[in-house]
Image (cartoon, rainbow, N blue to C red; front, top):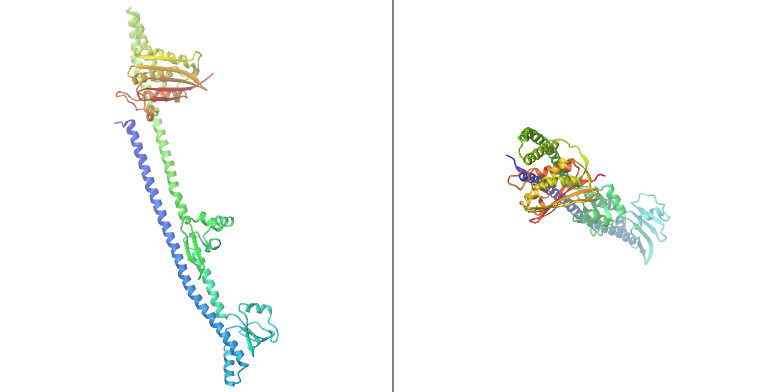
Length: 505
């Protein structure tokens, strides 16, 4: 059982809807996957930020210990200074021995003792060799510039200067803290999932560390300010505030990893691939369908011409016999016309089955000939008007097939008017085209059916095959390289078909 034109359209629409549903499901799945990956990456960045905060707490605690150690060393130096000063004032030998013991017990803090003229008297815990009795060399004095020298007074007069610096232990702790501060920044920046990150200061003007940035990103940062780059490239994710040290606050900015960036394009790529595949499938089936249609036309046309051949030959023989019987000449004449008409129809079908030859013909006269033939076989209730130029308009035609198209449109117009109305044929030239407009005052065609009516199998008639307009389009478009379209139509007011053919001189 044939599905018919509307049935095929419903199947096509169903397949289209199914394809859209599949695309929507895959698109939704990919979006969900991207969203999950993005959430996981933010969780990891949050864990890194939390690790930074935890380590900062450790650094803060270590810094407090560091400050206490610094205070203790200062107290030792103060005690050393006071002991040096009391040596000059104390006469008790036992107490003097105690003071000297205090001074000699300093094993960590580098100290240089000078006289009032800042000439070296003695040194302690210094690796460099310093000459006694001379001033401190500038190269060594720069190492003691962190703290002001302490003054040793006797009877209100400064007699000694005590230079000191941080102990070796103090310096090692300080270096350890600096390394820890640097390490946690690098660890956050160089994360394991390749998330591009930037750690900035509080006003986002300086990059403290970066990780997983491409050369392109680094060049952008050089061309633009850090703030501009962050706003443009890393605005999709909310920055994370981190505490860099006891007072300084920084921000960790990050953007989606390369994996997410690539996944973002996959839905579009999938849609493009699906559309391309659908187009390939569509055009493949369309080509097969067109080929089958052509074969059907050829087979049907040749078979029709073949089947008409035998009765036409028989009728021609009977006509000759009737002529010998000396019957009414008018009857014989009309019978000859009908037989000739059948011969023309058979010829037309045979030409549809193959590529017909075209010759330069006058479109005006050819159209008028077809109209005059149809006028004699049309009811008087149909009024026909012909508007045509007096001069000929030439085009390459197969007169037999072209006349068939005119006759087909004429019959359709009469059917649309239900055998009563006005039929107008206007022939004109527009630029390099000959235009034939055939208008009726019938029931009209809905706008959404302007193209559908040319499809094989489409018909509004209860006993129609839906092949007339399809055949007319084939003749005009494929054989004559022209166009046939619905120029205009209004429901219950009428329809105008237009045939356009290239002009030849």
